[in-house]
Length: 82
Image 1: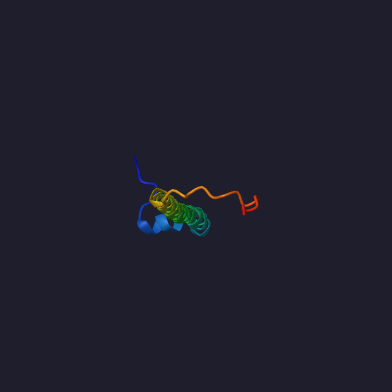
Image 2 (image 1 turned 120 degrees about the vertical axis):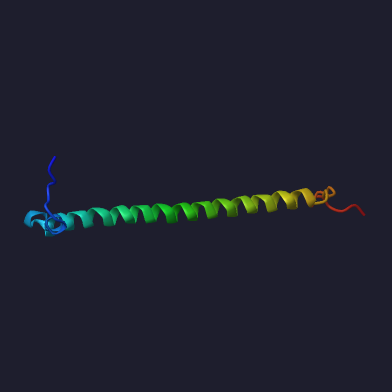
């Protein structure tokens, strides 16, 4: 098996098509890195929202369990008896 390029400079020159080859590589890698970055940031934000929602639900449950039973109020539509 013979190598396709004799030296590193030949590899980077890409047989005279270096500009087009490396431009295509860069234009492929930039969106891929952007997609990875977007996914990581979205995941962090989503996990933070989930933690916040769970914390809120815990606080609500704790407040309901500590709440004293409310005595039954009189019907506000009825007139007070004299």
